[in-house]
Amino acid sequence: MTAFFVDLGMAYGWAWFLATVIGVMLIALPLMLGVAMIIYADRKIWAAIALRRGPNVVGPFGLLQSFADGLKVFLQETIIPSAANKGLFLIAPIITFTVALLAWAVIPFGPGMVLANINVGLLYVLAISSLGVYGVVISGWASNSKYPFFSAMRAAAQMISYEVSIGFILICVILYAGTSNLNGIILAQVGHGFGLVNGFVFNILLFPMWVMFLISSLAETARAPFDLTEAESELVAGYQTEYSSMSFALFWLGEYANVLLMCALNAILFFGGWLPPLNIDLIPWFDIPGIIWLLLKILFFFFIFSWVKATVPRFRYDQLMRLGWKVFLPLSLVFVVLVSGWLMLTRYDGNAYQSNCMVARGAIDGAPVSPLCRIEDVQ
Image 1 (cartoon, rainbow, N blue to C red):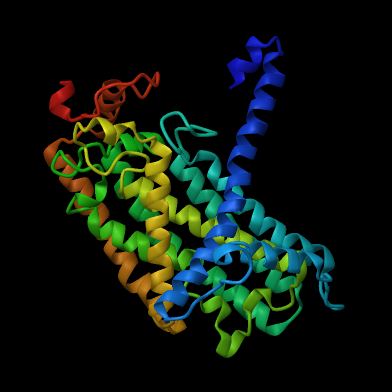
Image 2 (spheres, helix red, strand yellow; image 1 turned 180 degrees about the vertical axis):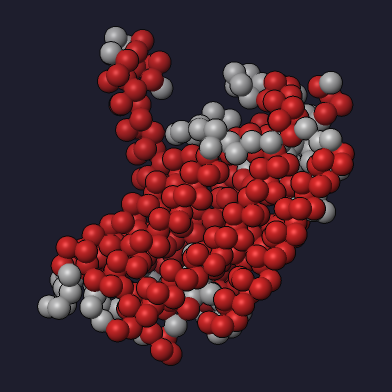
């Protein structure tokens, strides 16, 4: 896009700036619309599992319910407790919402369809997602109320506990892919499952890693059964108790944006991202744009998130911490040793495989090529 504006006679600096702003808007605006729609989908899935109707009044099939709720909170008065730290109280939901959007800068929606194709994309996502807890902690402390503060402390402990195991899980993925670039990780999954399926999940060493990553994703986003930060029986609404109007809505938008991000990471790291599920030479199969495959996988994982929330009872807090520190942490450490040992034993060269796949599929210059990409095809 930068080259397009340069060809129109614009200076390179301004062309890059305008192209970047357009790229940000092309991600942020559909994401906000998507958040509104998945809130509706979330409620419909819960209703279907509980044999209820769910939203069905506002708009056709209730599709405009989320927009009506958004209008309602927008028109409400913003109430700030008299004893609260007003500056931090107002900035906390902004931090949560902004951080939730920043991580999407490195998410590849298709070949070449990424705002920032950096080599440390996975580390960037891990770093940005860990910053989300700051908004929660600040909101709990700035409210100057007992229960929001307890909830903020819970959220901090919960996110730290599960980010440790997530870090070791990501190490296993990076070892197999030979890169922390998200596009490179996707390309390394071509034909990984018996040469026919695109995805690390079909690797016997990485399948347990995906299961742990999926469960850790639920804990990282404070979704049921790990929503201890908002447990009704003891914390009312948790760190959001004192919030109203758009401040409350920003927490919700940030939470669902993080849920979508975790769904996208599940798809990208273990299920081939924007690649088709099967690595077979069917012409119509590969004519479907990569962004469609990624969106379908994200929706599949979001359905799993909603299904779990509607069916699994909430953990106790001691069970939550025990699972993170006594089960997931030792297991992820063991699998780091197993994966690295296996790769050393078999002399598996992830970097060579990934670069060969990029050349074979034309991912470097975006040229259309054969869908098949296996080591024997490019040697």
